[in-house]
Length: 172
Image (cartoon, rainbow, N blue to C red; front, side, top):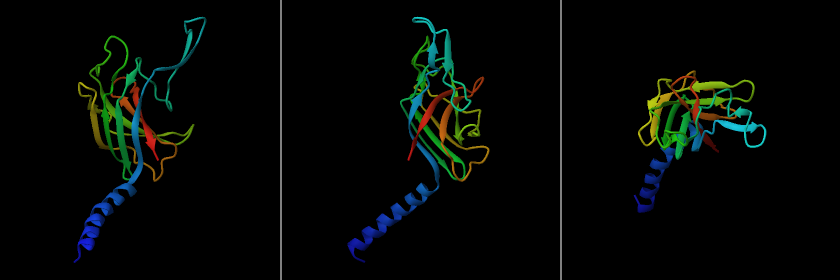
């Protein structure tokens, strides 16, 4: 066998499995957006008498700003989800720069208003590391559809109303 044929065999043995993995992806997310709980306010002068909460597809925001340094996620056709988040920390208030002892889980939301379908990882979640890093490796429930129209990925608190802390940026 020539060197060129050997090289081609090696390349195909690497690229083939990677292509199969890419075909199994329902949706991918690269990058993240931290939550700002209030999207706008109306009032006199410098005080807002009425605020509009930053509600995403019926999911409430928390009471404080959160930031995320990076987020990568893949949801496969069988519902398996892998999320790696970096630096999910409070970005305001007395506990700024901490993880506030939070645990998180992921929710994939498919569909356009008003018919959203929620698919979540285990709501007991995973604890944030002191630096805000986390990793979710789970299967979404209920089962995901064959296609996910207008996908939104939210990273949510396991506590209380399951507020959203960060959102994934869909990758085309």
